[in-house]
Image (cartoon, rainbow, N blue to C red):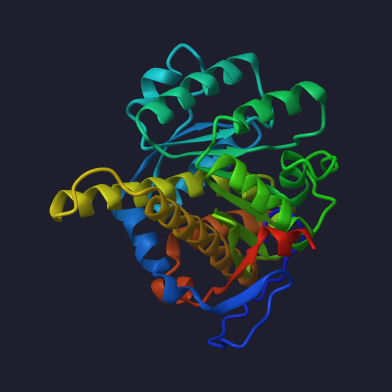
Length: 330
């Protein structure tokens, strides 16, 4: 959807007779069955504060994308105050595309706070494999078990030990070819792994099986606009934060006190990640209808993120499947 060429057709359908390229199909249909519009509404009503330690090329676009979906951006990326602000933030997005020494130190400090306070954080492993130092730093961050890792197919494959990386920021692998690698990475991190491409794949590991959601939509113009993929990482953080706030509200008003069970948390994070990708898919489709090219697509995309209604969000086609790790290796 975002990092390689993608169809502008959202392919909305109510069909449930479908198969997937890997694993056993468990259902396909539209996003309304997963409550995607409700999750988008929760982001807008909750206005989560997302701390972004992100690359300088996309800071403004990512901030605008967060504002468009109803979240609040904070681009604090210096080690002098990153940890202090992380205590205030609802979630963290780390993207080291143009990493400075200040950002590296800031990321370490902010991630530490997220772990201590059980807040979600997203790692976008931009250009992992492009250099030895970059790769070692991103691997070290991955070992800190991010709530979600979001990248293109080549980035995810390398992190899982199944590839050599892409061509700079561009992927040289297809999404379907790295689903197995994504599942292994999800098992290693204990979190969500999202792979962007012509049809996005969101993966979670549950015991000896992987759960896979494929989100169709977007536009072939998306990879021609700098920031669409990187801003998705920021919006994903916002969706995860809104999900955590919903967990807290549910427990505060119900009889089920105590911490959230790991399997429940993983399910909630998985659904939140699907919702963020569906929001981008629908916005890309809508923006492409109004754009003449990449120059007009960028503002149209931000408008679409802001203007999408429940019907448009609910029409995004999503396929769900499960597979064992043995099947994914085949």
